[in-house]
Length: 531
Image (tube, rainbow, N blue to C red; front, side):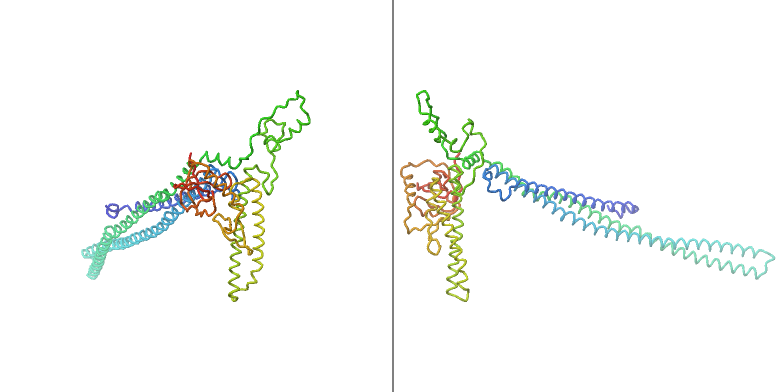
């Protein structure tokens, strides 16, 4: 079944139907455009929301950033940001693969339809022109035939008239004959025009218009097929990013499962443990036995616990819940409780050592460059490096002083393991270091170090204690040679048993399967404790 056969007389219907189909395509394109705008606005709002609640770079060192619940919240914000990116991708693909493609195809269909309608109009005009010629020849034939009949009647009447002359009769017959001849020519012309019109009409209704109608049918079917593909793309575009969106949602779920309330509690302890002992019982002062009042008063001035150490007002019984005034920050962190002070000193010392390492590396590089310039003057002037070498040496001396200063404070704070990590810094006269350990500490193994006493402490721990049950396990993130006494070497990826947690000095005690034990840098491993 086709339009040319079954709808040969429904030109107006076909014209309206094809126009309506094109309007549907335009309507769908507009619908998809509005959908993409919704997706883009949604993605923009999600990104703004994630940005609003995400922490600033300056806040990443805040204490709460170490809580698993806080980290999980940040993971959720990151996943939402990625989710927003997928919504943007949906909008972009819909715009490219549906809106732009369908709009271009629609313009082609409109032009094609216009061409077919113009062909139909030209065929119609040609048939109408032929019909006008037919109608004109028919009317002329009718008119000439009537004139011929009147001329024949007049000739017959003249021939019967006894008063008419022979010349009149002859003239009337000639006139009738002439009119009959003209009428016959008009008749033949009319017959020829009729034959021509019938032929063109047959061509018009059985060939030209069916062909045009079938072309319009093919155009409309291609339009419907293309529109159907656009409908499918509307779904497939979103299906395509569903796996990634699913991963984003899985990431959010994982963020929730990664929250560890026990670890968060441990972080609170680690960050806020003061190291003070609980206050002892207040002694009974029996005034009835004649105790020297002055002696009693002086005894009250002796610190008996954190109330005196923290400068609490004794008139407040519930000092534990009273607001504390903000202490004055000092360079040696003496304003902090002992435990927190040790950690902050340890952290500061590590930062200085890293900075010192950079200066030492730069000093070595400048020394090598100076040697190259001296051996190959054409490459540069060694004197041009003097200022840089001098500045680097000054920086090294300054940082060495900082290291010594913070090592002294750390020793005063009672940090264990600090000497092992930091007391072994030695430099030659050129400011270059002799031996470097993986954690940024420097040691001169050829020179006896009085700090080796700490190693004996470690050895005593291993000799005196029986093999303690592991409290967890750890995985090495970096290689560690364990060259110093009391330490143990490890390779990246190696799994070790955790025997003793880091007590705030940056070292963790571990054991291998063969029974070897030693200390490793806590920052070199990821630790999982038994629950």
